[in-house]
Length: 312
Image (cartoon, rainbow, N blue to C red; front, side, top):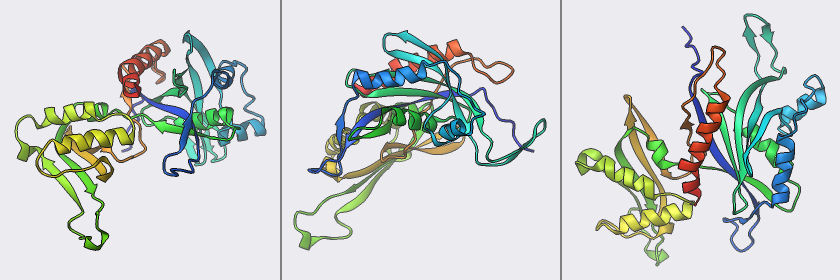
C-alpha cells in the first residue's frame, strides 16, 4: 500500500546569491562582487508585482517552465529591506493520473505554493530563504528566476547553499568521525603511495565518554567558507599528537550520526550540495496549507538565530 504523503512537515532552507567572475590569477577561486541596492531593487520590483500571470498563454507557461519567471503573490516588506511572500513552484514533465481529473499530461503545468524570505545583506549578498512542504519545494525555480532578473553584466550570478553542521547533527548521536587528508611531498622523488595520504577515523566506542559533546563542539566551531573550515580542522588536528597537517592537506571530513535507528552522514567538509533544512513549527489546515503568519515568524527566527551567525 502506498504511503500517504505527510504535508504537515514544513521546513525552510537558506541560500545566498553573489556575483562571481573568472579569476585569472587563481582560476579555482572566482572573484566575488556585491549586488548594489539598485540591482536588488529589480528583485523587489518583480516579487512585489501583484498582477497575476496569464497561465493560459503558451509563452508565459514556457517562461515559467524555463525559470525565467514565476507567479508571485502576497508580498510584504516586514521591515526595511526584509521581504516575505508567496511563489508558485512549477512541476511538469511526468504524466500521472488523478482520480478527479483523470490523466494529467506531462506537458501540463502544475503549480505548488511555497514561501520566500529575501533580503540584501550589508556585504551585498542576497539572502534567500524558501519553504519545503514535505518532500516538495522549488528553490531551483526561484533561483533561476532571480538569476534571470539579476543577470546581464560581465559576471555570473552564483548561488551558494547555507549549511549548519550543528543543525545537521540535530538530535542524532555521533558514532564516528572521519577525516581524509593528502600531504604534498616536498621531494617528489620520494613519493610513497602509503605515506602521503590517509584517513583518520575515530569511533565513539573507542573514544569513550564525551564523544558526542566533542563532536557537537566541533560542529559549532567549523563554520564559514571551505577555507575557513579547513583552517579550523587543521588547528584541531594539530593540537593532538597523531599527525601535523596544513589546511590545504585536508580533503574531507564527515561524521556518522545515528538517529531513530538509522545512520546518516553529516558533512563537516566536502560539498554535498544540500542545504540544511530547518523545521518550522507551524500548523497546517485540512487542505495541507500551512499558516502564513506562523511561517513568516518561524522563517525570520531561523534566519536570525541560525543563519546570520553562520554568515558573520
